[in-house]
Length: 250
Image 1 (cartoon, rainbow, N blue to C red):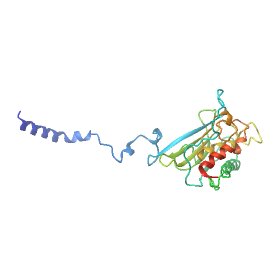
Image 2 (image 1 turned 135 degrees about the vertical axis):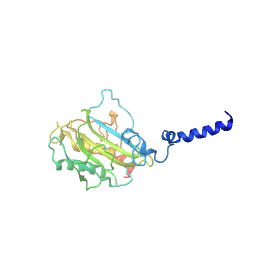
Image 3 (image 1 turned 90 degrees about the vertical axis):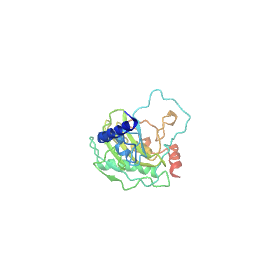
Image 4 (image 1 turned 120 degrees about the horizontal axis):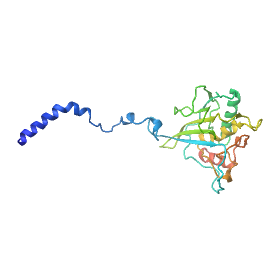
């Protein structure tokens, strides 16, 4: 077959197969590629603009037996903070232990006010919401505090914080209080896990503070372990205040 005949044959072949061939062609990535990517819950980057990340702070009931003293600072910054203040939050008071709505909201709002009182900025809106449908762990720009069952019975609570990769701004937090523990007012009953105590610690994460695990810092609010009967985290220690004021001012 001559060159001209071969070229004509090749063109006819391409035209004949064009429809079926185009159906299997790979389309180059474009601006719509995000819509076909894996779901956000399976991706390390989430959000409409692909600029959100999530970090989970897990609060344990007991310190490890191999904890060692350290001379490090007794506060640690996450490196992110709120830029739009005050922060609104909602409380879902639903719980299997019969705690009243008023006792729950009173303890949590007192915890929020503890952080507010340590800086010149108003961190939390005094008018919190009550939402019995609010859920932990749903990235919807609603800062939700709720009770729920956590798979690890040794975990008291978890606070998840979503923040922007660019600008390092917190955009949401959710808090889960594990119903494997008996909650209440430990000042009245030391067998209970004190709600205000734990909520104060967890709200520290919500404004940009990390856990501290050094045993030389075990009296600070952001120390990463707690026990039933403990109420010391209801108030802030100087390192907690110093860390907070580095972010939001004195």
